[in-house]
Length: 292
Image 1 (tube, one colour):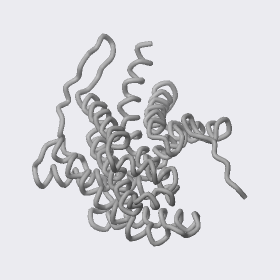
Image 2 (cartoon, rainbow, N blue to C red):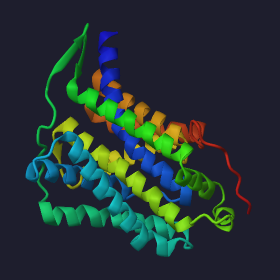
Image 3 (spheres, rainbow, N blue to C red):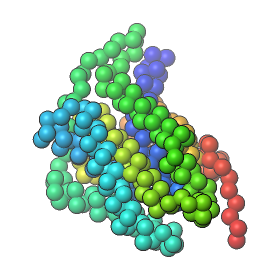
């Protein structure tokens, strides 16, 4: 039982990062029905921006987090304007291929500028360990969980209580009707990309702090796992993305703790296959019918 509780704590801290990245996937899909496979690489760039802010500007954890979120928000809006907006009325496969191309472009442009080698992340938080009986919680895990919770609450507030959040929900429900009601659809989509990319940037900084290392290809696998989390929770559902991210994190740590870390990735994707077979719409997703 003690080992299970320890792995549960580890899984929640890791799953909090997945949840932040999954929120970007699910928000963009909810608005324009696009799986933004470049999202994992925006998370990677957020980690590098946080690294640069701490290594060269000498700022602490919170300022580096804010700088990374701002940089990734600008990057997300730029990608949407340059790559996705011209294809808004194109086929889904064209947009999907473009997203994969943007993903590869971000990876190898970053590799060109910073090199392919792994970099050690600056130590931003103390290594203090808290012993709660037989469970050990590090200061880093507490910061990660608290930061993720604060950002998720902020996102829920924006979506449910603000004017732009109401516009996002209206565009998600019916883009044409929202436009007829005077909502600026293009601005709403850009804001969605900005806030989703900012959350991914925050996730990049948190994972740098958690694992103490970053590299230009670090966004590939976590990006796919965050996509799995979004699908599990119900793609387009914000609470579903949160639950999905935490679930994937817990599954990973339990497989690593009771089996082997070599199989944790396989377990996540096997979990996705089971979910798609049993409930294709996800945990909180809605079944929709398309007219032929």
